[in-house]
Length: 195
Image (tube, rainbow, N blue to C red; front, side):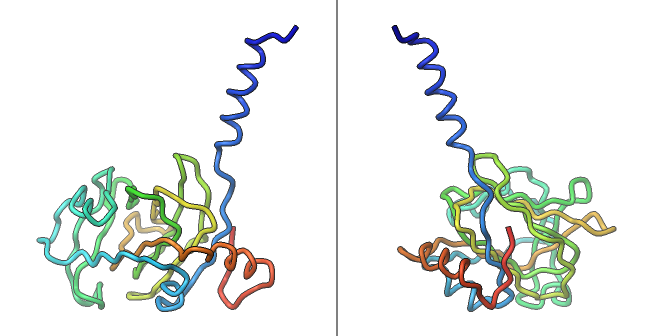
């Protein structure tokens, strides 16, 4: 006779184990056009139109992203943000810029300065953590994941506990692109791979 309680518990446990996201394979791009070509729909946010020091929370909800921890602030300055004179900086308390996407995303990119890294999360679980980068103003770094993510955290990793990003870009791949992405990962590519 089958013990139904044990069988039900086993099914529930198997569901929990299989729902944990695996670590993602991520392509890293240093060219915006190449990054954008890997995706079919992208959204770009330039952080213009707000006074200096504005706390960013749900102002971009209609574009698909919120900043739930309210530790991201508008910073103005053409020398800091060569694209358009406006960007986002983290508070000195956390040094993090946290973004939560309303729909799962496969790509994220920023123009930024400073020492920072990015972590991607799916369902609250870490699926990717980048290297720390120290790049000059306006440098683009983009990521395309083979797994969807719903949250990204850009963290300061240098001695200065603040990080800064210029424009923010995110998007989803073209139908069938993930198969091409997986093939490129096996055969090698010109972009840096990590994860």
